[in-house]
Image 1 (tube, rainbow, N blue to C red):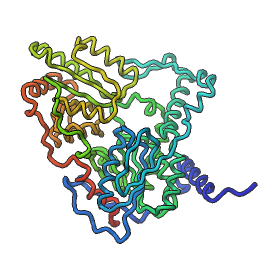
Image 2 (cartoon, rainbow, N blue to C red; image 1 turned 180 degrees about the vertical axis):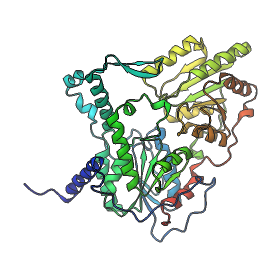
Image 3 (cartoon, one colour; image 1 turned 90 degrees about the vertical axis):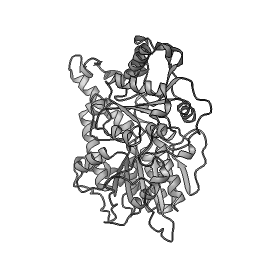
Image 4 (cartoon, rainbow, N blue to C red; image 1 turned 135 degrees about the vertical axis):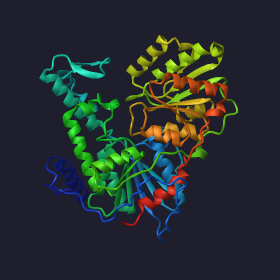
Length: 488
């Protein structure tokens, strides 16, 4: 048999290095990295600091991001904004992403390459319907208790739960990870970047970066936009990945492997950075908040919606629930019957079919159907235009203690009064107050009504006045210094 080509032998070895440490961590230890990023203990200073003098040759950065423009997904906006302004600071940047419909001109200094995903595990399993039916789920979700209870705790239900969680874990990379790893490794050999950044979700992007950087003298930063192995908040306790014990154990192993191999870890919130620092003492964890590109947002609308126009843009998942806002709308209408013809709540965004059904049930139960428009998923430009014409933007962050919805930064940057529904002392609570948004706890319907009344009487009364920057232009200098920082 002919010997494998050199690049194939490297990928086989890398794949083995990925699997074996999950069972025996002492095997195939990650290559030590002498270049460690300095931690920004309190997050980037608003306005940033002057970047260090650039070396004679341009700094070179490779970013692995499944989502990136022209894709509308909000997850692609973070590094779209940062790379644009890093390029203006002299960086040469390559971005490896999944293909997306449409076209978008990359900023000067940024080269975007698309890597087509393969078939996912679930797509492959569709070829074997008998196997899938053999392990059909025998569980139902008890909505009152908020947890899944087995109907007859037989071995088949347990096996199904574990198998389903493993399929979800395998699908997490969207069929993109191994192909992206090969392309990224070739890019590293060709362009010799100083730094590689992988950003998630999907969290499999970090596996692609781990495989691509093995044995390469390059700094690698993991950017966790959402928690991966944890902390797991109440909103996610019933998710299939969390309930699958084997999948949860593998996730914890993978995260530890990647964190120990990476130069540093980036997060979007101080709360998640603190939690990861406790879990991985001695590792560099830095929080860099999300932001927006102000000059790409729509200008103030010359034709705002009349009356109390409320906009909710965002995906309904996890603990996010619009029902308290609908209850507040009902209470506002009962207190102000004269506002009947000038109140409208417009909601748009992705949602699973059961979420849409529950939303429509709540609308009917509260008799607010004439005042609510359920618009479904909208293109990003249309969603931003809708917010720009509204008087009040609602941001849902229930049960997401370590996350801040990126939509918060858009409405604040647009100058629209913003109401954030979240628990006390969460990441969204802290960031909303910094940005000048109103914060109300999920069960405080009366508090939401007060915000509605303020905006109805005078929209400027609740207009946000941020303490600190919300533009990626202001964050880019600190990010530049962090990525190319000298070892401590």
